[in-house]
Length: 147
Image (cartoon, rainbow, N blue to C red; front, top):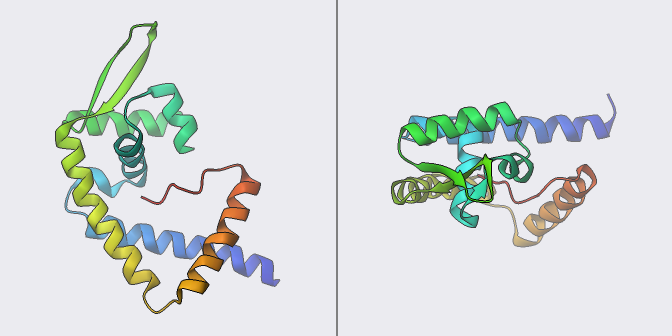
């Protein structure tokens, strides 16, 4: 196995372990699914969006977004409503209850990130972020999906 494969396997393993850590630390079961965390993060930071655009913005499959939205709506974290300009499309927005729940989730993810990066110099952290941004750019993905 060459070094490039080792790097990507390591990144994949770190991602899986980080996701497992977050999933185990959240108290709210709806947030154990990574896609629900990403959807909530997007809505919390950006406000309402068309459901069809949410798939594009989060890089999550349409069926997975639909499943996450159903769960989030069921617990009252999001609201769906008709789009006045196109009745075939649905707008999604975060509720007050959802904002409060996301703030609790954010505390868990911030703590996990801080623990993970503890002992890494600011310079090394900046280098890591720089390299990951380059790789994400090559993949055509948004680097800010850190929930």
